[in-house]
Length: 280
View: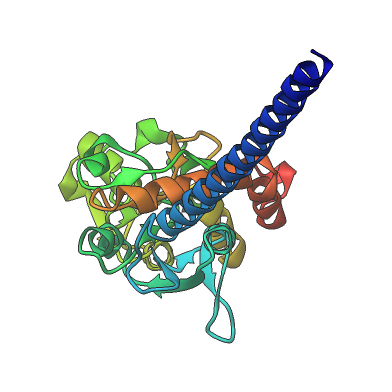
């Protein structure tokens, strides 16, 4: 009887060892399979991230702008580019792992450049309007702008109410031009390729005033004696980045990068670098 019990106990130990051995092998196999699956998932995710968006030129982010709009975009003495928009664009390019390329052109051509796939985005002190939304998509706003009126110091124009019947100079394609043409008629508005040219026309007596964004207006008045900016603002608007409706992935990547730069304070630091708090 004792021999029978001993035999049964031995058999139970054998079965127990076999069961443990089988469990260990199964666990290792499952772990290896999970690790392999995770590795494949990570590689797939990385590949998807790499193929997330395309740009006009591989490895580059082309920014369409009109570099005659200080302090947002302007040329340096050595022919390079600087300004609020340029630095924001550069920071976005860095986040996307791309090299920024600034494409300087007439303001009236910047949106067309994006639509035709010649540029990836527009940063040009560009205001969001319903009309522009029909042709391009916009990022979230990164700055607030004000349209103001520049006049000679001895002008009889004291507010926007006095612009009726006056000859108004504006930069072509801008909201300033659109607002003035709608309110006072196209016959009373003359468009110029950039703000500086419009201001020169004002100094030469070819127009009675110039309607343009506040910050470049301050730069122009500072550089030209005999001019002033009226205290009354003409209109308030928001600046944003424009990009093609046909490249949603790139637009989303640009907007995400912009929001990160807004949240971590980078955008405000760039703005403060060019515009002191007492000038806003």
